[in-house]
Amino acid sequence: MTGFTPDLLNRCISCGFCLPACPTYALTKDETSSPRGRINLMRALEEGSLPADDLRLGEEASFCLGCRACETVCPAGVRYGALLEEWRDRQWQGAARPPVVRLLMFAVNARWRVRLMGLLRRHARTPDRPAGPHLMLGCFERALFPRVSRAALRLLPELAVPAAQGCCGALHAHNGDSERGRELAAELGRQLPGVIVTTSGGCAAHLADVLGRDRVKELSEYVTGRPAAGPPPEPPATDDAGPAPLPARPLRIALQDSCHLRNGLGVWREPRALLERIGEYVELPSAGTCCGAAGSYALVRPRDSRRVLDAKLDEIEAAGLDCVAVVNPGCHRQLDQGLRRRKSAVRAVHLAELLAGPIDHLEAAPRPTNR
Image: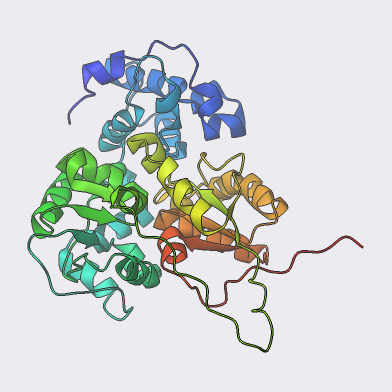
């Protein structure tokens, strides 16, 4: 069993800038449940002052969301996401790995099983074009939200979408098997040569780390990097019967950032710029903070996941939104389920669907008027 990379572990200077950025510290106000506290636990494990089966080690390796918000405020440049992966590589082996995570990793470990998940779901697919660019289907997104890839293909018809592609390895990398995570990313890179466009922020960050930043583009990044589109078409002429009806008011849209996309790749301006073109964009105070999905976290620790989500749902409903845009399938599932539990009229919609539009049953609701 390998230890921590010394440069990663020793870089933390215990300044505490990470504490206000950490969602789990915000919940508990417990130093141990902060990045600085967890790095101290990692050091104790490395030095042997804590045994590997210490309950605090297991609890905090699980309790951490892995959102990497601490990295964006760290003056010492601590790569906390890489440290967390090394920690779980040590802690989450065999029976110590949560059972639901073992099941998920088994499901995506073989390409045929990944393909089987989306076989009946009518996700986008095209004949392969070896030169690319390619659209990455994702593992669970192709099964849970197949309309996202269909929307991405309508928006970007130049993309090739071979159905036989496998997993990117992010699930393995974040859950105690980073070596297999890198292997799967490299394998996907061979399956999809050229530029890979992804509708999943978490997958984008992992793929870019393995394949290189030039090969991986998240959807909003790819769209904003294309040549500018021409002017919008002229409105249809009216006839003698009278003026054309007033258009419906623009959709009132907010965004939930993908943590790894924002904190790992620095992509957050691009989706906002696109949303501002298609509706009335509303910036939520917590848009850049974790929604509690965090990959497998919502399944491993559902109670804590909902605690993180609840305040965000309050914000969404108070903002008078029509929909909240997402750029990651885990966030999509988390917000969709949370809003449905509350019987909210607000919908969670992937950015690809909003850009490709129109979306069935999604229209701006009338706003109350003052009398």
